[in-house]
Length: 148
Image (cartoon, rainbow, N blue to C red):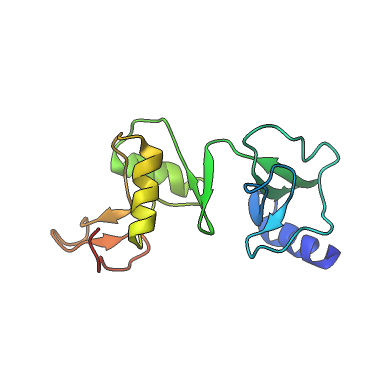
């Protein structure tokens, strides 16, 4: 496992990288997203600190840390919830500046999850027709194939 940790540090540099570890099901019981239990790790000496709502682990120098900071985990994906009120372009810039993008909704379950976390408030999704009017594409370049 030290080789894996060195690999992650080389790839990520000083960036924060989610490593696929969560204690969402049971606080303090860390599992990988495939459901297997963590047997050893590279926690920063001050982590995990057990703060409520910090259910995700990220890798950074000098080790792993638990975090939340507006992130939600569902169905093998993380979602960042911002309270900023920006335009679609500004919101996308905000996301991409943090190494992520606006939400791409692939199925009804994800649509319902997004509606639930928004609490009825409007939110931006990663769907645009900026290249060709009325030709909708997701921010990853894929075309809109379903409507929910």
